View 1 (tube, helix red, strand yellow):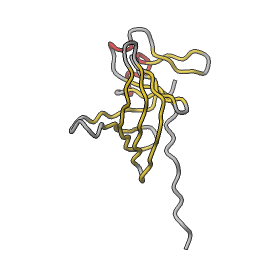
View 2 (cartoon, rainbow, N blue to C red):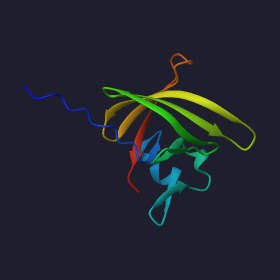
View 3 (spheres, rainbow, N blue to C red):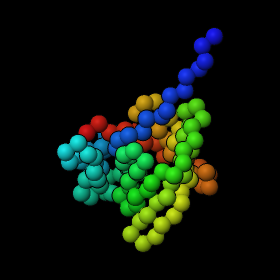
Length: 118
């Protein structure tokens, strides 16, 4: 019997809360995604590049990750213009281009995100 192979969840790219708003939330400069001007008017999103997660108002560095099946628990050190904090959250993979994000400390706050192709 062959052992089961577990593949790492691939999260690189720009993720928006609504697929049809990708072009309003993100733009592309060279081969890098960035937030479009006034993107916060159209929806939320984040960009993952390696161990870096960028939101509109915070930049985070992933400190640890634990994958269990299609769930990925992340711990990140984040900084805004006024403070720093440690944040824990989980991502559940729905399929290759859709995840849902949840915060363990906040019950019922789950947001679905779609990977944008720019």
